[in-house]
Length: 131
Image (cartoon, rainbow, N blue to C red; front, side, top):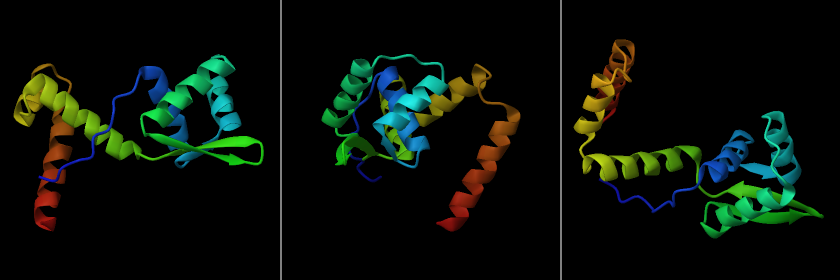
């Protein structure tokens, strides 16, 4: 198994900002982020957003650059990589790395439907054929 780069966890608020940036193709101007927040009914103050964006830069998930007088934020980590890292963290933390335990819980708690299972089975079969 390949060693994955450590990706820090983020708060729900920080994740909201990352999701906006990922939805914009991995880059977004500060003004665009504020517009998207407003469109989603979020009325965070300017200082709050700047603080959260700064934290994401400090955590190594974003980088910032100036375009004239405007700030542009670029995601260093893709959404898929972040999801994979968080899934691994969950698996390790709650199931001691045992994916079967996680899947069993999903099935027992009816979070994974028969249709989901069938789609995963087909996906698994295709992946095995490719290897």
